[in-house]
Image (cartoon, rainbow, N blue to C red; front, side):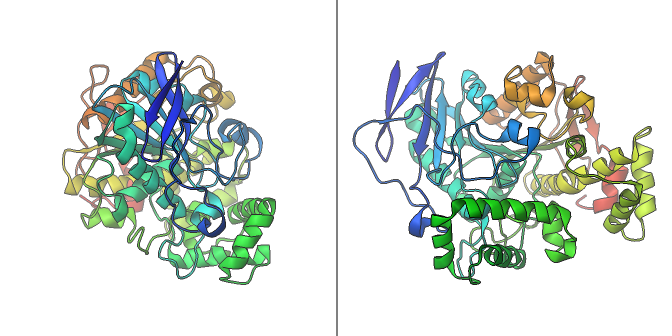
Length: 510
């Protein structure tokens, strides 16, 4: 069976699958090619006859990560520049007023797509929510700093805003309420959510936000954007600032561009930080949103401190062992001397004290585990905490913080509650191939029931509480109460406070 829905660009024909109505590969903008490369997205050219919306659109052009990371996260279908499409799962296109959840995929702003096993499972639509996943420009296409362009370094962010405008204009035709839109994402997707909270052009397009394992600090400055742009131009043999020449290379040598971008990411991870600057070294990511222009006037945490974030409800959190997956996969090799050096470089003059603080809070941990805890805090927890502090100060009673703590059995149990392990639980998609790669076999369904229900409750009401959890208090910057989600859910006040104080002080934000 199929179903036809009218959109502002033209009618689309989806399919009815297991009681859900699904539309895949709907264009929300024109392909960003020719003069639209490194430019704001333009609305689709209208059509009149129903277009089939039965297959996912191409993923954004991207390199494939090596090994199991690529096996888990890379899309299993073609990529291409005609990538500005979205997908909709709805319980009933004839309904009215259903809550809406727009998912922004992660992948370091370099890889990924709005389609994978977890997403296509359809669990949010089965829970009464109109679910939308989007593709957006990645890597050099999405985040190149173009000198003199007011949108420089934020073409991917503008794509996300264009998709949200499409949702506002069209989602009622799929049963959704344009006044009840929640945005969410994990990793780079969670960071994109943080950026959208601070983006003036995104105001009024959503009323709630979910940021999972985000890294909202530091994002990048125009100076960092210039360093990366000059590096890419040099590697591609293009004169500095020559956008016409760069577009020509992108047109005729797309594989060269993908190769150069991949090499740049690898180089940033392995070279002396002084070559690219402290901002890029802090995240080991040279292509991500740029702060300081029209799209993102200020960093999310700075905007929050000034009371300038979007006036929305916020669910935010991190995983207890985010960074352990990096070491379990052999993506970074370190010895004891390197660990000592990293602690000292992070806390000059206090490296040994900081290492002792982490060790005291984690008895029996290896030194490598202590480094993983440090990098978890640096990359995810500190920025998310500062953003939650700022949001809670200016919008009390509407901030909710979680820590995911269930230890995966995948990778011989070496990764703990690592980065992305919460995703199969959020999407209630245990048993899918992607889920088992992250959780190992036999992950507890009751935990997925509880976490998925919390997300559904928040999307529906702005409050994640339900009868399967202990009472989850709203987060405030004085007590920093966090819901720890694991085999035994519990509320923890200021978890690992001594470690956090190394980064932001005992009284920061309080």
